Length: 271
Image (tube, rainbow, N blue to C red; front, side, top):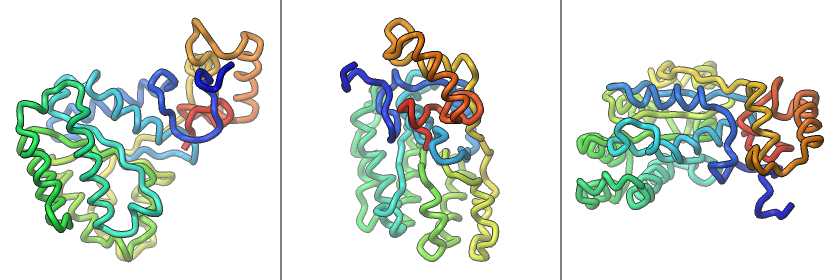
């Protein structure tokens, strides 16, 4: 089994759409909400390696083939870590870069009805601070484009109230309330849980979200998992598929009791 064709790996998010298994219900829930006139924001909650990252990435990969009016939506994925959570400026720049990168990649070509500069210009303002960020996203919405911001590992920001103060979250709340953006935020605890005990956090942002918990895979999805890359040409023999299925349940690595979109040993992301 060559490494290039091997759908099973030990760490990292799923990089190929064909290796994504399950979560159809979760995807429908996200896209149904994104289709509302004023989309509510979602908090994807699950343990480490439960599949949150892969689910957010899948939203950005598939929205143009699922949304009823894909030209009116742009979904971008931003993963936070040590670098882009050091300051508000770094946060805003990460969002701007993701949106700028998506413009030429948008497969439908429907963004061409607007001059590209009209979308790019507000994202290239210097300094790109809190006010510039707010104005840029409102300019996109004025052009009838809803940015869906899929924000991963958001706890990096929540754990730094001295860097990301209450006013920072108030701006995000106002953008959501005004229907300017939809947020899909992944975290290990709910956003409300993170705010408890932090006296600085009084913003209404923290009671904004509908919670979407990342639960176990169903049995049929678990079988799809062990039959990767496809049921017609699985990487594992039938005997090894059965072993992987039973082992996944018994070892709690990704089938029934503790399933994510994928499993650590199966190679599908469980972050």
